[in-house]
Image (tube, rainbow, N blue to C red; front, side):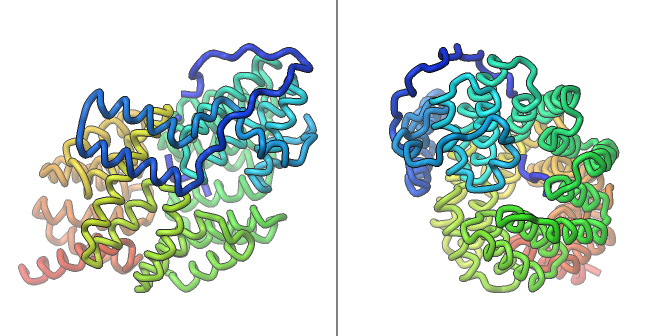
Length: 489
């Protein structure tokens, strides 16, 4: 499914290319474990609570070093590279590489570019693999390594479509979707059948709120390169328009065509997310189980399973699963979800720790060139500084006008006590037909605050009917608001 997450790829200048036959780069320190990254985030979060301003900026730099253990560019760990499978062919595309074991692919490519430093295709594949790995392990420092690898590829072969498609993926990962669209278009001028560029173009149009164009781009991609990456994006475009039936059918088609464990895990998770959003928790859990049977370490499936467990009433199981997820990938979504589950059971100290880790992650991501305004707005509106939430939501809305940024701005305005101003944005968030219980809950609460009781009852009822366990705190607030509205009749 199109990344619902949220990048300027132009970044720093290109590095000089070492001559052919140059000795391998010196070994760099071993990157820290996932637990080490979380510990680094905790230390930063503690420092952040004690200080502000320039102190935090310097802390963010130190945090970036702690997260990467000093890793630079694409050097990685020489010991790991020595154990990797050598000899990655120039003909091997990034798309093929990253559908297998990403860590093995990255180590293999690092070994290969040391041995064949003028292989532009391998540099492009390495850059793209680093982008994909960052999406799963929550380490934004990988984006700098990806940027340098892609720049190296373009220095060796200017305008090559593999590196341009990699730059599109990198820009999308950093949430610079205008740049992602530009890079994807340039790549498609060189190679109209580039699967990565076709997919990045859809992603960019979706995240810029240009849904009609995204639908056309998905149709073009389906004609040129039908397959799992295109099918899942096509399905998401249909879902955004409220056509859940078509989205479901296309995802089942994608699952039937999935060729390997990575594709099965990816598509089954997308199906699980779709069904969970419709309140079909048993079906969602079945799909997550299939994803984890294909890849028992696939974090998006673990996160989805935890959210379905929570929605279905298994809060203890959800907490256990989410603790596993955030220990390996401390991203804002699962951190907030875990914090809310802790808060729901009365453990406010643990909840506050998760929310502080969100702040730490966004500081690191921002230092790595990632636009984190949407993440900041969503987390801060409920669990942080409402003024900061409103600033971030306005900035996100100014850059890209999507249903998600409309919802974030509506909710931030409401939390700042400006519900009448929030209402048009809440309506816009639900205007495409996209059915999301959180959006409906936000709209209902805003309508209630604006004195539109009848509309509020309809929105809140729709949210709980669609997905009664959409959020442990949000669903409770929606039910309480409905009770107040009924009592006031």
